[in-house]
Image 1 (cartoon, helix red, strand yellow):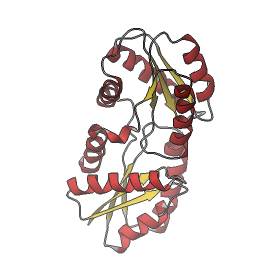
Image 2 (image 1 turned 30 degrees about the vertical axis):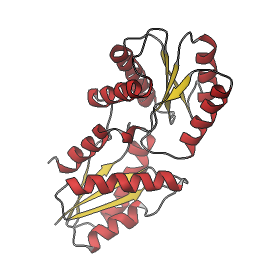
Image 3 (image 1 turned 90 degrees about the vertical axis):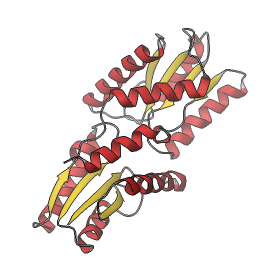
Image 4 (image 1 turned 90 degrees about the horizontal axis):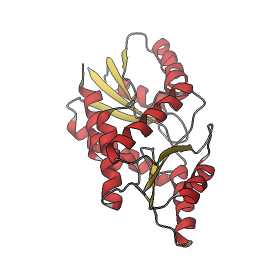
Length: 241
């Protein structure tokens, strides 16, 4: 019997965890597979091990693993495979099929550009966009963010698109935001390149409020999972053979 195990990052934020569960509930309703469970890499229950075990208890003989990760950083390349390797040894008769993270897709970049326009209306050349990533020491992830910035420049028709990070890479968010605010001639639009709310989103929101109170015209688009295309991508991952 087939099962799908969705794996989220996990968060200390109840709001973020609730968003992830609600998101998977919507996805599950669109996927015709009898067993579907959510799990988290860290900070939130159930763990990957617990979610996998629940699939097996419900009769799964094949488990498709769908990571809810935007890019292939260390969690995708090391942490999740390490857990799944242990599970494969513990359940040798269970077939495990692991799907890729989302990656840099035209559909996602189109959706992000749409979120920007929904937030501020028509984007003009004087506007500046700051993409905020979770952060990683993986050079492939940093290269992906360069591609994301290029893709958004093309879609929005502006040159002022830059990237900053909340951890593990530079420039850090506060530094990147200060640089943008010092040079911006128009509006500043911050894009948190994150799927769900959490402590990192709270940090972004707090900084934006500081600048807004100073009279600056600054906005942020909100989380990416608010756009239907993210749900569509997960459904496609869960149903493709």
